[in-house]
Image 1 (tube, rainbow, N blue to C red):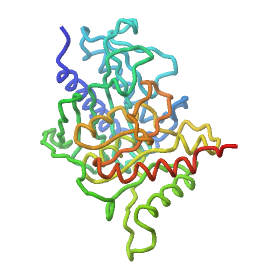
Image 2: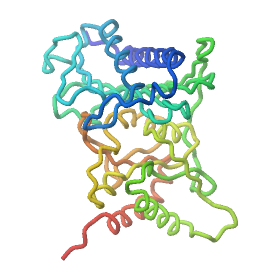
Image 3: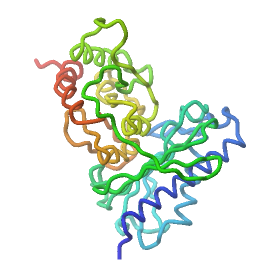
Image 4: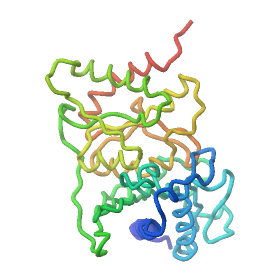
Amino acid sequence: MSTNPQNLRLLLCDLQNHIRDHLVASRLANTDTDLAAISHVTQADTIYAIDKLSEEAILYWFAHHWPDDEPVEVVMEGLEEGEVVTFPRGTAVENTKWKCILDPIDGTRGIMYDKRSAWSLAALAPQRGADTCLQDITIAAMTELPTSKQWRADQVSGVKGQGIVAQAVNVLTGEWLPLSLAPSQARDFKHGFAGWARFFPEGKSLLARLEEELWDELYGLGREATPLIFDDQYICSGGQLYEILAGHDRMQGDLRPFAYAKLGYESPLVCHPYDVCTFFLLQEAGGVVEAPDGSPLNAPLDTTSPVAWMGYANEELAGRVRPVLQRLMREHFEEPRA
């Protein structure tokens, strides 16, 4: 008999609690310089020492806590490309029931300098081999990895079609608190936070120019004494989604795959499926997550596929942006026809 989906949700939460506690304990024994040391470079990303700590914690947890009657394939950043990891160990992939995609630490660059929270992301989809994709995900959890000065760390989890469970833990006492989260119901973007990823020098000017044209068309620039739209570059896709879910931001997204392709960059520094594997939690809370062209967000559950996405606090905001964004993307990213 299959395990209740809510029990699997709780298992993902327990896994991430283990990662958070392991990271907090390790930070006490290491300096920021130790945690920021480069471990190695993969096709997906640069792996820092702090990432290795979480990967070890994950493999230990699965070996000791994952139920044998729910065999699972684990796909995560940090594993060698082509490496197959299943639990119980040695299970053939074709005999697993689930594919679990993980980002042990999303937002490494912020947390390794104790600058800003990172997030641990995990999601489960019924196993369909190489065809398993983001749209197959039915269970997900995301847990905040706090900076050393934080007393609270948030956690959001859910089963598709059954809403979300939001709670926070006092990392000093271990006490759990209920958490109320809801995306903004604002009808426009005025005097709110909105934008998209331009974290690194590559493609920054192109992405900024497109964003500036979007706001100019929607509201006009330079017409107000104070800025109408505020920007927050949170180097963490899970964190961006959380900021919408929590009502802090009205729009976030990532168009880097298009910008890099236009500029001829072959950079791994784009969003990957594990970075957005918890996207349906925002949808369960009433927000919108989609591909930039308005279609359902989708990609194979691997560690290398580039993912472009847009997230909105509500459908009305999405409807304001969609037609303008799609036209601007055609103008900026598509090659002119002969």
